Length: 207
Image: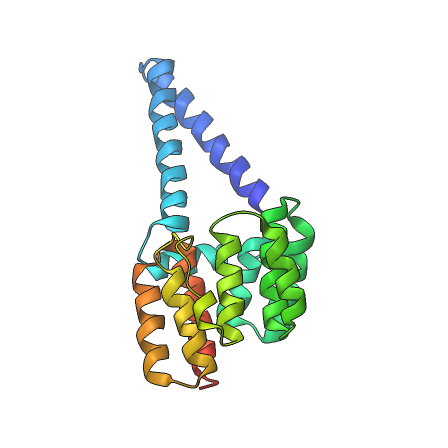
């Protein structure tokens, strides 16, 4: 479906470029216009992924691309069951060959399965900051090791409050959980914010 959509899009560009050329517009100019359109579309996609605060835009993107492994996982987080999420993580883990990404998703799966030994093993293998430190601080929060759950390596602003929220959740401190979860969600953007919103919403049910 994605290939069909792209093929139709490029075909429309070619037809319009030819049409403008026949209308007297220089071919180089018409192609330049459509190149700018294509760049704008790529920018919009990147903006939704990483920068937007508009979760409706992210939700539309996730639903539109839910057959792709990464977005299938996000869709499962937002709309699926625990089993759906675990299945989608298996697909993502099989898909990604880059060690940092593969082991990061293995860490997430181990956390979902309450398997801290597997989570620790995956965290040690991520080998990319700030993902490694986030995973290790997350585990420390689950184990109640407060001195180890804070790190200067958590350079993404949403990370430390997210870890604090995990610790508050473990301690059944609903007030602190709400405070840190909200703080984390407010500073996150794009798909990260989307994932946090739905993850914290699910965690809230266990308070």
